[in-house]
Image (cartoon, rainbow, N blue to C red; front, side, top):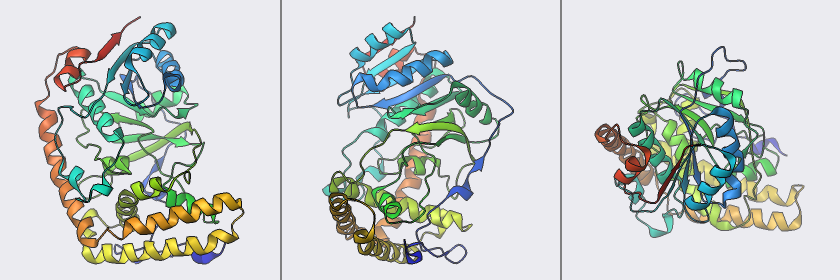
Length: 377
């Protein structure tokens, strides 16, 4: 596709353009010299139990419990039966929105009801962090239920790298896990890269004081420190199952705010800047660039090699992105980052208060989750 779609590098610190890659922020480790044992694999799941087949197998191979945080079409009862058949240690619970975790200021931004997220992925991952604290686990892996082909040795190697790094992700060899806008960039010929995320990530529990805000790209914000990115390594491989990013326009709308915020902040970090550089002037320039970039995507769609039907859906998704961005202002972006900083303090205070020494069922009950099954073969 035409080179004009690819963003030019912005000036140092004051970068205002979308970056197609943030890989310079990561450390790639091909053959780690050490390995370590995982204490648990945490899977936030909303799909039928069959989607947990691979995670159950991996937990058995690693000889660690699988924590299944279930809602929607997922069932703790059915997961228990699957774990019993597979002979896998299991902690499975039904997740609802009455969990006793902090009410974050970021969850109320923007005030517009249309911005409210419908999923509970962030909530489940925060439950996983809280449970890990209460259980005294040292190294846990987050694994989404649409991730496949993770080698046990890669998980152990990632756990071993936590002696040196704050987070370790597995490299994605499957379907690119990008936003709708980034998928559209790739579809019209731009070399858009992916980044690590919560789909397959190992964290050191005691050193982790971050949380997952309820916003798209919540894992990017989890990885973010007060000013800059945590020390992150990438090792091994995993496979992301394919999905259709243009199936509905709602996906583009739901992602736009979090995608604007995350891509803007990470563009700054790429240029050696910090979160503190993201003032109103920066956001005004970045949002204007994103609007122009999406306009260029729309203009390029008719010339792409996709089917007529997919071109139509891509065009609709990009226009949905435009529509949602009308409500995103530089002031709102600044307010969100201020609220995020305050929420981090709230989360740190909360995890310090969590009780220790409770068994898994009582730990989850402390968080307001009482429909829990624990199985030990």
